[in-house]
Image (cartoon, rainbow, N blue to C red; front, top):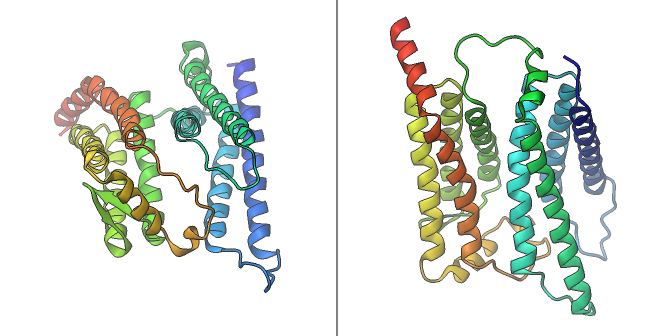
Length: 313
């Protein structure tokens, strides 16, 4: 089937954005390896630069592959873009809320009007990215567009999960892959109001990553038990965030969390502001609520898959 203009434009945008991301990763690599470390000045922390470089290069490579896949009308590329669109829309609107509601710290010698201009400009930039993510979600869910990808790649055998479940599964899998990275850098976390750091936090991240990978593959395999467990897991995450945000002493817990960051990250500029209690609660509520709604809505697909498996057995 012939590729539509909207798909072509989307593919070009994805490739251009991925190329810029790859260039950013190479620039960070240049900063980390080639710039001299002057003894008279402050030492530039390289550890977070290595981490940022890896993330930029990985995201750029995946995006570039997705853009090429869109040109070739590959089914996996459409799913990849939809997963990215969900994450882009969510993170962008949350970032815009940060700049609009939380603000930016005052800088010595910089007028407040200038800081406000930067603040609103950044909020507008993230809102434009939010609009792009929503546009892609609408565009690539239209029947006239989805039909263009029916002939791309091999035809899958057996029952396939609904598109919404595939997106949820891949979001869980991405989170599962990222969790060990958080464990390696000993990133702190809150568990029902208690601050976990060091090895305690690392163990929790490893366990969470294993659970998310298990649930993600189970959802893709249309296993009914994993669908139910995924709902409970998402509810657990929301309750954990709600308790951590609503218990007295939230600002103190946030400041303690910032102080518990890895040493190299504590050398990075600190905003000097802590978000209000409702912001992390909002972050932990919006996306999981949508995911739980789709998991409940698509119950019949899992019941049918379970009956089919029993008949085969």
